[in-house]
Length: 339
Image (tube, rainbow, N blue to C red; front, side):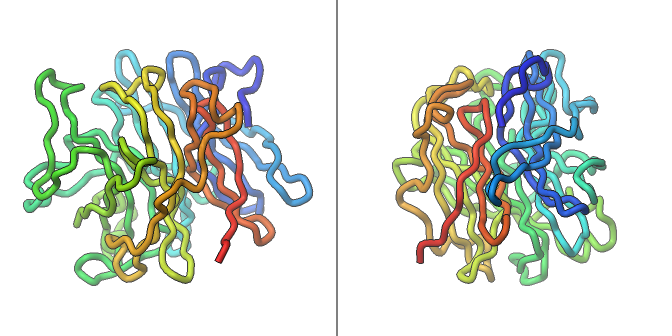
């Protein structure tokens, strides 16, 4: 998918899509559409196939715009980088997205039954956890995505789990404030965390899905292609060995702030395998990236040298990964199991 000529809603790029199958059996992408001024919306586009392979899209409009006050600042606005997980036990598509509001990027939640009409449940709220000696709600947070089914929580009870990536430097907001790390965390690079919502709470009210608790660090940067930071990509995929998490790793130089055009970075994709009985435990990971920027579309764009996977879908028994290309376009790669 590339920006449509003459369409101001996507004149600055189409990227980082969510995905899902509608009630009609059609596969859809929900791309981030960027308008002038870095104002982002979430669109809807039917995936077109050629010989069973995703090869293009048919646009079907916009399904989420920064209409709420907490999604807008005086000089910025956006609903960005959606991830959509179909959760059968809820009979809902659950969209996590970044609300780019007055205090920078904050995660939020919306739900839908058909991918077209979305109901906001509001900003995510991280319950206070005394042993962390901090309030996770203070920090910008991105790369949020739910598991597609309940998993055992830290207390052994079934829970809905969500991956996320807090950013600890508050200097962007208050000069001189600097980095505030949770207790027990020694590395100030952004890593992958997980938080939980008990199934029983969500059964009482779907609105409780935004009230996350039992926060745990899952993974930090370990390998050269992850030198700056890592973050989760598509919804975790259940495989025989556990939960497969495709993630991005970042190298290069990243100035303070959220303007992507100031970054001199490279984004590659790797993979983690999480224990199915304890999703806070990594049981395997790739020491080398599995997808790197190679094509012209991946190397040249709003932010060059970026592949940013955000969705996995199965088409006729084959899994495909949809990903952002240089923060400007959307590509697709086949995901094969080699052993």
